[in-house]
Length: 122
Image (cartoon, rainbow, N blue to C red; front, side, top):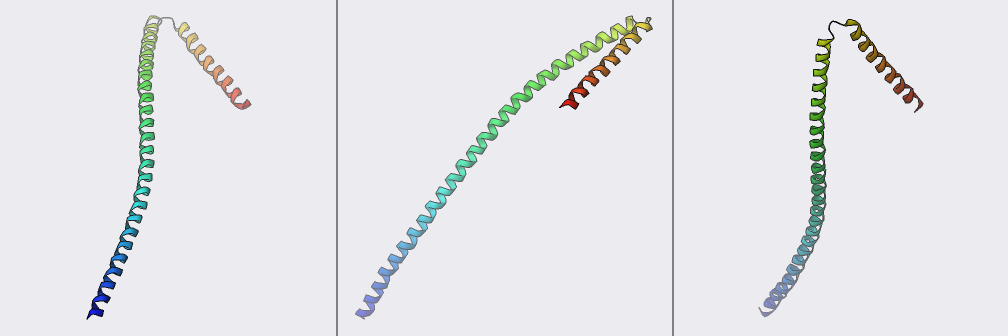
């Protein structure tokens, strides 16, 4: 029986050593995975910071565009009002209106011609 007790205590010591080794292996694996997770978390934080910075910049650009569009809307509204007033005053003078419309049309054609010739050179 004593030999049996020695064997069982030997197995117990061996089992304890084996358990310790298995536990150490699990702890090492846990540490490696924790380090990998920390690296991924740092990468995600960097991406989140980049996204926030880009979002803030986009909001700034969009706010500026809103202001620019409001200014352009006011300018076009005032211009349209002036054209209506002018056309109401010059309704009797059709000849003047024809000159204005013809001059505008020639101006647009001239600008189109210049832009197309510049585009062909590039």
